[in-house]
Structures are given as structure tokens and as C-alpha cells.
Image (tube, rainbow, N blue to C red; front, top):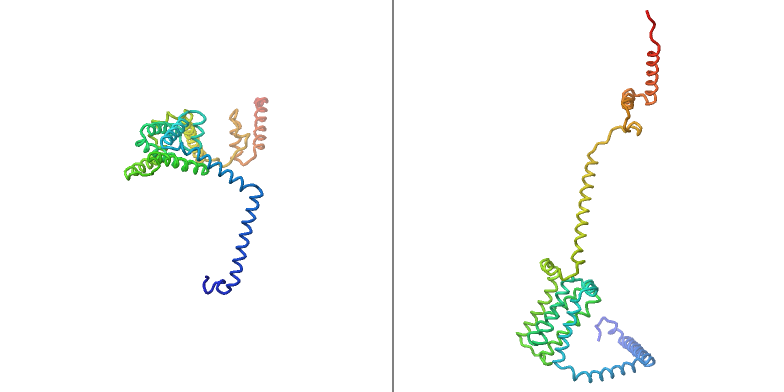
Length: 305
């Protein structure tokens, strides 16, 4: 029932009619979808797939026993660790996809192989090793650069740990409070290792040899380039400072007059033109007339007395 001011309270018949109309439309839509599914054979296909899945589960269930689950979890850890340890293009691709250095991948792979062996031979203590590995695997999946890659790894690692717990309890899921505490601590330690280990400079220093040489030598060009850029910037700064502090001449002389003189005449010519205010052409003409007059006096001696 609606409130006193609502349309349903004011017009109950119209509200019931509208609700009946919507109910009829939804029912017609459901019937239409079911009819289309029947025509396309989807319902028959889904029923057949469900029957086949049930038959497969009936055939597999006798083999889903704790011993087989322990073997499967141990083999999964060993195979996954081996895929991380093998160097080459696969290791480089995993490092690029997961966003972690290669040396950390190799270390994690070796740890997974060891934990798989411990869990297979010592099921009770090995459960904490599996929790440690799956904590790191879940954190790695959650921190992947591509968000689309995160859900699959998180769900798969969680299901692997759940299968190990199921196998240890023989399907009863009855763990003591102490075992649950150690299990949670191991899981948290794996998560912390994934978060804090890759950026560690100390671990990278002592375990960096596990990665490829190209990864170790990659920072060197960056440092050299940075030093070269810093040198160029310093030289450019000094040059700019020298150019800025160098005073420019008040009056720029013509290019012909600023060239290196072959004799002292052009320099005196420029000084004379600047001092007398005459143009260089006038100064040259005056000098030429003076020189001709001097030659005439030398060539014609004065008369004897």
C-alpha cells in the first residue's frame, strides 16, 4: 500500500491496472525468449550438456580422494615452479606480463618446487608451505599490470589452497585454531614477500645474477645517457653564461673592415673615417691624391738656386 499522497493511494484502480499491464509485458517477454530458445535448440543443448557433465562427475568422483588431491597439488606447484625457473623467452614474457623482475620469478619458482616436494612427503607441515606459495601467487595476480589478468590468477590460487586444506582434513574441513593461525600467518607472509621483495635493493644485489644479463645491464645506458645529458646541459649553461656576459660593440663595422687586415692601412682608414666623419670612399680618394702628390715631388726635384 502506498502513502496517503502517492498516486497508488489516490488512484488504486489505475495503479493496479498499470501493475497488471507491466506484469503481462514481462510474462510475454519471458515466453518470447523461451520460445526463441526452444526454436534454436538451446534448451535441449543445455539439458544435454548438463547430463554429460553429471555423467563425467560420476565417473571422476571415485578418484577425487585426499591422496590424489595431494599429488595433484604437489605436481601443480612443481610444474608452475619449473615454468618460472627455465630461462629464455618464456621467463622474459612472464616478467613482462606480471611486472616483476626475472630474478624474483626464478627464486619464486625454486621455492614452489621445494614447497611442492615438502607437501607431498610431509602433508601436515607442507600445508603451510602451500599457503605461503598461494599467498604470493594471489598477490602477484592482484598486482598484475593488466586488470584482465587478475581475476583468473586470484581465483585459481585460492582454489588450489582450498583443495590442499580439503585433502589434509579428508573433506571434513576441521582445522584447529592453532593450525588456522599458522595457515593465515603463512598466507600473509607470502603476500608480504610479493609486495616487499621485488623492490628490495639488497635482494636484487645478491640475487640479481638469477635474471638475464640484459636485465642487469639495462640500467647502465640510462646512467651513461643521464651523465651525458648532464654534461651537455652544464656545457650549454657555461656557454650561455659566457655569451651573455660578453659585451657587444656599440657600432658594428662593415664586414670588409672587420676582416683580418693585410697591412695597417685599412685600420688607419677606418679610424680616419670614424674620426673625421667622412665616408670610406672619400678617405680613400684623399689618400690617393696625397700619394700622387708625393710621387710627383719625388720625381721632379726642385730647381737649383
